Length: 139
Image 1 (cartoon, rainbow, N blue to C red):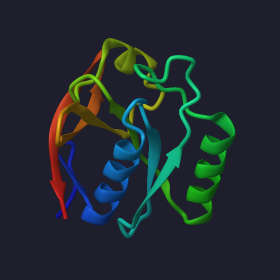
Image 2 (image 1 turned 180 degrees about the vertical axis):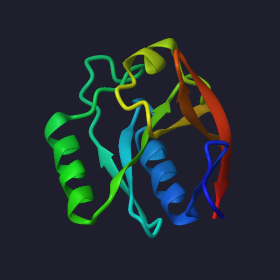
Image 3 (image 1 turned 30 degrees about the horizontal axis):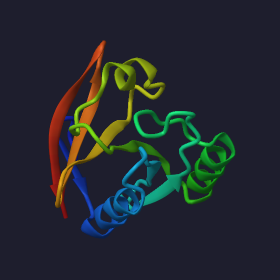
Image 4 (image 1 turned 60 degrees about the horizontal axis):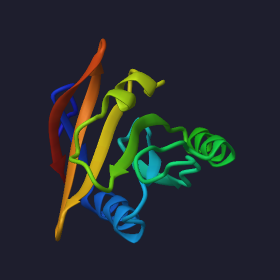
């Protein structure tokens, strides 16, 4: 399925890996990056959250983020999406998420662990001073 600004397709095994990362760390906002190449081959790179308040904020560990970007370059991938979780909130970008997003041209994926027994995952694109939700499709 081709990707447009209205639709984002992700392979189910990668989604499972992202959701497992969030479930294994339910008290903190987990974070990571997705790289994508010209053949639409995607990889998830989990990165430690080093925020002083990790239950409601994320700050990617800089050396791990640099290593992930280097791994993407070695695989001829580009940064495709930024991923993080909300342990106690819905899968909607906070005002801080919108303001601190330094990569305006990539997808933004949020996982919510707010509902017991249910994981919610939503995708967004930056639209000036806000984020617009787009359809997320599992392949």
